[in-house]
Image (cartoon, rainbow, N blue to C red; front, side, top):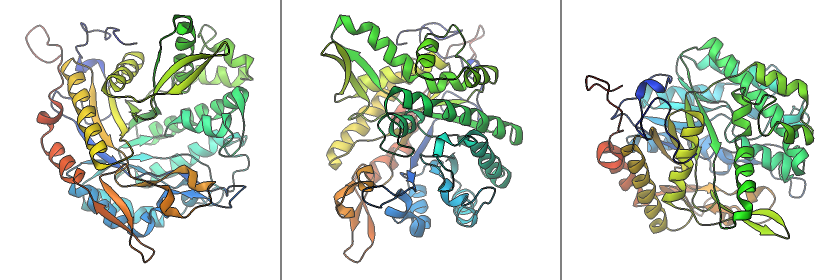
Length: 448
């Protein structure tokens, strides 16, 4: 938690040797700048509108991928978080279609020199997978897809995210019933949690077996929790521990003594799966935190005797709290794997400045923040499109460096904002932008 001392260090001074990661190694001045394209894939048609949610289709990335990748390269970034549309790449059990992905990754890696951090799953399951995440073979099927991907692209790809934001998958598919398989409540939440955790575990194992040197970037939707009510302190700690559950299960932490074990079993968690996950721990190399100031700051309030969460506007202090919390909890270097804010260019620029200043401050204290991703690179289509009834323009969320603008002929122009030059200049001056990572010195003055 905030203020916790780093294992093996003094205060918040990072010891580089404490963080075994996939290549390349952490150094004081190395920093991984990246962008990403929103890549949510929910191919099952909404019951009310008949719409599917495929961001690549909605933003015309399938047709304009080369232009989009060239725009990313123009920023000077050497990394890019990039999602694979699982439902298109794996259209039938045991059958894969890599024709589109072949061209994209060849251009990205071999022509542009950008190293992808591959999102193997960015929400959603293939259409043939009945009950989606609750399909009895889901964990093995996702691991098989991951293995097929690594066998084909291991020569091009070094870094993988097994499943983006498990908490969001679990919430939208298991708690609110917004996405398939439309479960609700905390029992639904737990019902989704277990196969998703097992799927991540089996995916990491499959990647490690085929590509031992690969870097696993575990990406989670994070939140800063606070309360002004002393009576809610226990509820606050409980809420945070529950948010850790997907990652704790992945790492095999949830044994009989785990503080959330009883809650899990009370809400339907089976002993067999819990025991399997405990017996098959998998680790990751980098902790990816996704933070949006308008969504990632939460305040607990008392409502009719029950603790409830309410979103508040966050800022650098909340981002700092989240990074410190996850770095201390999991003892891994941290990348900000998604951040931005929706609204005017001025508003986005202000958050870019504030978030980068926060990263600089953290690195100066020795907190191992090793990367920053502006996400999305250009406007996205908000998820309300899937269940809404308006035209596409009504759902464009302007959060990027480029704005998507309807050209009046059915196309979406990538219109640059002043943020393009601002981010490009930031990337070109790493030390000036985020400073060096303060590290603890060894007995002879060398970096430990």
